[in-house]
Length: 437
Image (cartoon, rainbow, N blue to C red; front, side):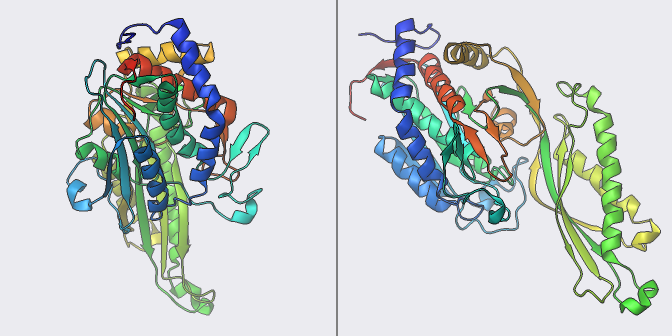
């Protein structure tokens, strides 16, 4: 019997067979990805796309687990992000492959199904839910972030079966919700008991490995005013004007945190890694009335090593101090944390998982794997901080994620799929198929 166990270098002929299998099935992979993009899996609407993936995994013979996230199960965990929306349609899906005899090391292949809002659809070149392939790019909301990666996980597995092999260790295919707003989906999967010797998350990372990334907090700030008729503006208190003063105070805290970048490992070379994004603002009731209220939503980044509680304390102190400004009339802004409450992480170098990925990337791309630091949120923090699992965030080239005309580079996606297939073979080990999956 020709058996490959993990830690054993792959035979060059086997490498060629695996990569050829990815090539052979890549048109089907793209078609499947296009079908998945057509599901508008916005927050609160992910369940139909999850049903689609559930069936695709079930047909592959995986043992299926689909559950609705229960906030009571996870809210006491330090990695939990507070929410003020319904989880009625917040379902996670996990398909588990388990060999009869385990010879290699286990693996989680994770991805998120939720996508961000499209913005005004008339500003897209075409419907964000009708995926198009143009000049080597696959377009559509979620095409890159990260439905292409979710599908790559499955088709990498398929490539091994297509040449008559099966992995020699458990693999857990995870499609989770809430990555774009809290990270509670990945946290729920961890707390449900899913553990492995390594994790791969094929987020759109420009064919590179993420070495470190920031934590993220979401919060809402409400500023109170005092309404009067505009003919007597001087007797009123304009909450919208006060909100701008409050935002300016937060910008000073943002500047302070960015000035400290040289104190944080892997962030020394980044001039502005900490971004306070004012993502939404609304206020007032009537154009001819001095506005009595204004609310704005903020997303802020924090360095690895700073806890969410520490960041919260500094943010709250900033808002308490600004309340002494005459433009706020001594009324402290009210702050509510309502989403991400997540710490950042660093992927320490030299793990067996990273070394294996480097070998597989070199085979697929014929180049060396590069790593970088990203100022965006990643679910990897759940697995690294709370699961103590080496987590490799590594995926294809993209353009305009979270923007108009989001797209993923097709040739890059094919090579990433090859890398994942080779990683499964190298990390988990493979044996000839003996049963029909």
